[in-house]
Image (cartoon, rainbow, N blue to C red):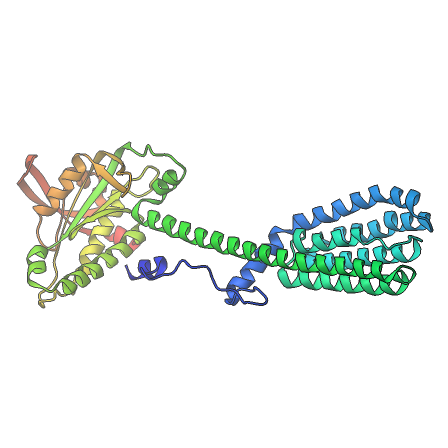
Length: 437
């Protein structure tokens, strides 16, 4: 119970998104930041490759335009665009498939952006245009800020480095022959593009990080629900419910059912403090849960101090009546030496029956996997008519266990709803079975 509370969280657990640094927009929690960057690097590699391919296609289309429209050196510029710039993009695209660069693609984008910037700036220098062409570079600035899946600081660094490079080369070589007004206008447009891109990027980065955080929190909550469902229902049944299969009722041919009940627990609960009663019951059931896991059987439910277990259910279960018998012996040994809050020894009664029954999930809001049939009722009667520290079983159980266990005939007893029945005490496993266990 404690472990379940720790995994699911207390009532005061906050669903708020993790806080971000004001300037860098990094998550303040380093684990969140590492996970975010890892997810971005792994999830955006295809987008990076697509961006390089689009750049190659666009340069291939624009190269003829350079050849026919530029006043000077048009052939050389078109050739450099078609082979030089595209060659750089092809190289960077190829490097993205190398393991070393698979998580370092922001550096590839930086090299590609700077390389294109230098080409665009030199085109302004040597093309002979009366006024430098800045529209292509401004478009690239917006692409760096808004389209490339760069991290916030990486995008800002890349865009500012390219801007500085473009302005330095173009200003010294190309703006000299134009009016100061044209130069100032071009510079202001480029600076404005950076300012607009910066705020657009900041908003986009906030949206990315919040979307990532929400997706992680949703996954965590989904896992909590999955874990809780697996604790409430058998694993195979829970999986079928998650897959949308609401028809989970089946007839099973042979299921062994065990009921265990603490001796005089009702009287004990009335005379002890609630905390003492709950602590005792929790300690006992935690031991039983460990034994259920050990023997590979299925815990069905608890009703007050009654503990119900089945072997052979749900469908596909590999456990059988021998596993139930071994569990019953271990349960008796588990409570030996345990004391009640009043100091008296703790006692337990166990009853086992087997046979065909129906199993399924009931309820549509509080799911419960349950069993119905004569073996369930009979096992419950075996427990209630039993004796402290003993395991009472039916004829079907004796036949199924055969020579693996020793039995002591109890004789006929009156069983509610069944009349007179012959029952046995399961005393111990045979030497061969005990050695195997």
